[in-house]
Length: 193
Image (cartoon, rainbow, N blue to C red; front, side):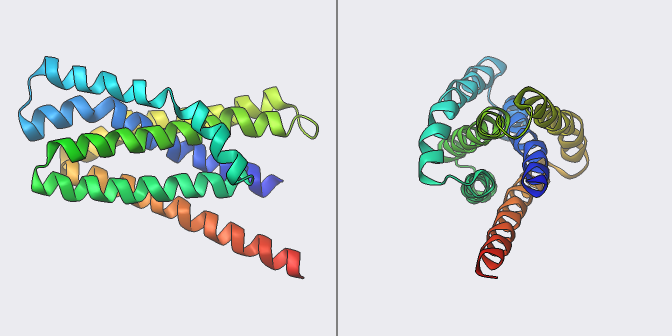
């Protein structure tokens, strides 16, 4: 149980790093990379939180298919990592519509992961742990990710450009997928032993 809580805490950091990084920095990306006006880039950015609203509903449906919370988040990170890899390629090609669609999909899946971590898992653990305290602790780790996204990604973009930001976000998502695969493998070995 401690391993599961620890992994979900780490996932909370990465979830909000990606989610808030995309939500907070998309206006700058659209303005700097594509020369869009302030009003259009902000209008397009307002759509990302609207897409994220569906994250809670998606988390309920996804958890029915993948009941293990760590594996579920790992799958969501894997899909987001692939999408962000596509966004990185799209930035080089200058394809605005696929890039914005990629932003929306990644934000949706990270909002879904956030819902799993801060709501579903603590409620599931209510018989074993204080669910309110657990939700607060996991939400605190999510805020660490939000802080890193606003300060760290901005500094990274200033020094190395937006490509490096998306490379870091993609690597973080795919790294979380690898952790989930390792967790799944160890879990299966322990069941066999």
